[in-house]
Image (cartoon, rainbow over all chains, first blue to last red; front, top):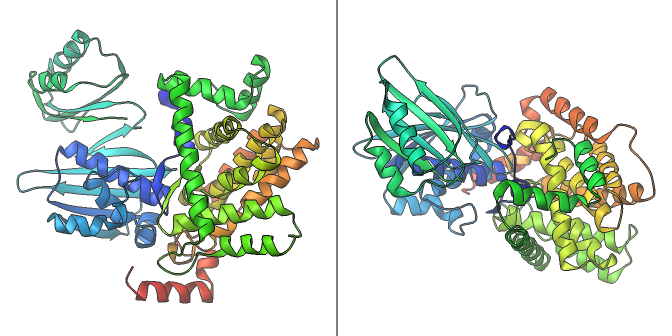
Length: 224
Length: 291
């Protein structure tokens, strides 16, 4: 029942504790950046960030630029280094480019992040829905709806029979309850994405076992 | 669990509990936390608010120079003269402004429900607490009550200026503060709902038109007036005044008005005050310099 409510904790409303000036444009942006970093699994070497609508018009004044960078650096919303994130990113050799995109978007505060290193890249779309709360709406071309209210596991896999069963079998073995599950694919037999929201945190050794399961390509965890 | 204000009030009445208590129990339930954990987390948010007010009253300046120092001016005025609107009112005004001045200066604040509207709730709280001889626990409960109402708005309408204009931010924040003051002053859950509705009705249609797209002008002063209005509405509800339009319908009206607002008036820094001759000049000056 709770997963239907966008805001289900009083601390979504009285909170977050954050560096000013805007919960949507600063704290929310930092959380989108952090989600991208977590899904990529390490600090990216470069980032191309498209900003839309209100994000595009006001990102400099609101500090959306340094907040996104802060998230990519792994900073929490109340990290005092937040306002220096652009300099820190530069020092660490991360090349970040901001693009004011004039295309329209479904939500006024939308960012598309393409991040990567020399070998691989990741593309993610996040929206900042207010009060610092964010949703991830797209990952590597797959539409998804991730509220961040629960821990979630994202699994890229081959679209073959048995892929889903191999994952759920492992989760069942460790008595992990699935709250919500979605499977998306671009084409029959190609790459597919499984999104599983769970009730409790999934430990690393379980993730490792999932990664080695049949037809699994990559795996990432989002902690709520 | 509650989805609407009507359900929230009904829950409180049926179980003979305060709104803050309903919110605390729900939080324990949803997040599977103990009462102590939930109260501790709110206490630490309260400390952030307290510190932001303290810094604001000492005086801060934003990097652009657009805001800062007004909280100090008001506190000084209060020491020298008796404010026409009363000391509690101006205390709330100065503390709300102080909080938002700290926010504009990129200091640390607690969003309530957003950063741009972070002054209303703590401003009102730290101004009425002395008059009401509030305990620390009552101050923490104030935030749970405010949060319960804010959650209804967030789930049924919006709390961001980009989505629904300033009515969604300072409107919601001022209304949340009204409801919380009523509980702290010993009013009923229904009176909290009336106070919430009265404040939000007066904020309907308020646009988000920040000069240069910055959370400074007019945000800081709107928070000041949001917190003062919260106190007035609370007094009205405590006196027995009721809103002819029920609280949930006011929230519904706020949602529909926000949906009809053009994007130039939803935190793009394009319309309203941002589009005045002075607003445009300030933008040019600020972005001419490097920030």
